[in-house]
Image (cartoon, rainbow, N blue to C red):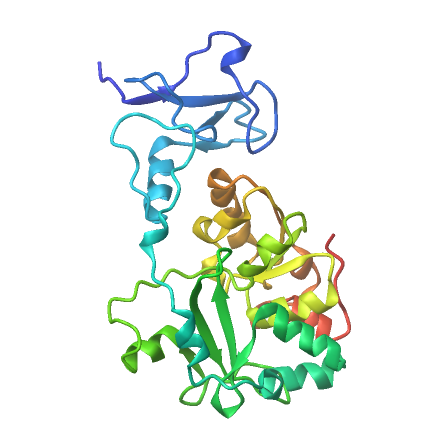
Length: 320
């Protein structure tokens, strides 16, 4: 008979059954234990006994795989009560003097995107200044905007340098220099070492410490986060910077938060599945809204519209 290193905890009374992290049912969740120590692998690693109505089953193999994806090496044998903390020395940061002394222009209000905001959202000078100061927006040559990625500790991870059409507000992708990374330009110029270790963070993450109790809104693009910040000020708006950046490592700083995620049309199911993986490792209340999915036409689904498109069209959805 084969001996397994991990197994579901045998029943020994109601105290051996817990609240399911997926459906919330009491005394229906069976945790996996390490047979060599008798300890739980993790409080969310286990199986819900409500197999038909819930079906939650998170195995030790899946848990350790998720840890490795975060750059965390699981303990070799004994279990742990919670996920290890990511070490701060696993990524590089851009020194402040390189930001101050870089070629970034000091007039972000002259970028094509913010000019579009002023003309189409009718921003006042005070609103424009608030947006620039809050999100630390900068500008580059040819009217491009710079979206910084500053983490919750104030570390400057990198920045996206992006070109937008001042008339439509859409990204320009068909010309040289329409997109670049700040760290890449600094490496090319010899101001950063070639072995710079990039670890991205959420756009707007630096705002979290100043608003510890404010609910968070998550969208895909930085442009959309800015528009939502103006339209729905009750939430603190952050952006993943891409559909596939909706991952547990990005959400670690959001532990304990109430989060409303608004995926683009066509991405709801993808983010809904990923949300389950995120909440396995991060203690947070994460709700993925289908408000765009419900109102988008077939053509809009194919175009992948987002909440910003509806706001600009005068149809801001109510999702909370």
